[in-house]
Length: 492
Image (cartoon, rainbow, N blue to C red):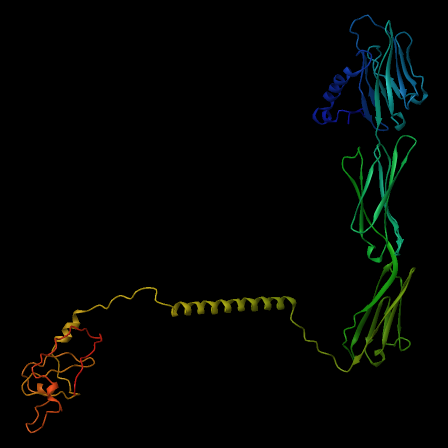
């Protein structure tokens, strides 16, 4: 804002130009907007704040040097139809300030008719209105132009909580106000509770406006301490004004007894019960009693705390706690049982151990399932058809050598029919080498054994015609060791 409290209506220029250039540019821009054939030039609109000052500029443009200036006056129009002279300048009689409302607050900046600009100091909200710079001239008569002064006022913002009692009807639980603002402010609410708000405005005598807003809801104990936020927006504020409030809902108390662990054994010391109360306002009266009558001698009461200094049969009873606030009372009771011996409590696994065990079990199950799946897949692949053709058997040179290499005569396991006139050959079985029995080796006629006596009848074939004595021995097969073959049929 300028040093003298002025804000021009051209807001975009205010952000781009430095303050001195801004004032000069605004004057040059607006001087061409006067009335009276462009002879009187003023600024169209100015903004100012209370207790500050503002300069009202005026200039007479003499283009033909014919017009004669007699005097100049500033006329204030606070409302339509009301015109008050606040400053007059005559080149011979000097300055005059006839309106007492501006006494000692208005002054001419230059003692010249052609530039009769004035400054108004210690501004008030009531100074808002239209200010006309009017010349008395000859021979054209009066020439004038008007500036509108807009007075702005920053709001006085405030917010407060209204304490209510829980009930079934909607009540005002919070209020927010933006007072003495111009222009009027707007109020909004931000809340996590169910409710609504109403807003009203009141105009002040100086042109300011006060805006009030009330937040309403059906209050419950659960609403106590919840937050609502009042938000105020207004033209003169750089950002939204916010204020957070905590609701205050009063309600009767509620109470519970804590601390009993079901392990009050004979001889135990310092067993404690605590009476926990909640309410608004907080209960201040706490009373301990026993259902069996007066409190046992071993019991010590300190506010909401009951201590059994030594457990015995006298505390085998029902303890009652009663609390009160201004809205009501509440009580709670608990029955204690005295046991002979201390109950040993085995601590269970911690939550972290349980979670870790579960995760470990899941991981183990996943590993087992993966292994089973892997093994079954390997078995399925092994039971399927071969994925390649096996290579043919490789014949080694040692196979032929074994067939032709002489070896010791094997022991005869079968008897072959002998004929006196032909060759006898032996058909090998198993892994015995193939030999040629066509030579006249002794013992060849009986399979390699010793010669038979002549008196032994070797004609075992009942049908000699089926055996040919002139058959050639079968050719020796080139069969490697380890290979299989089928022997020809042999008749015995």
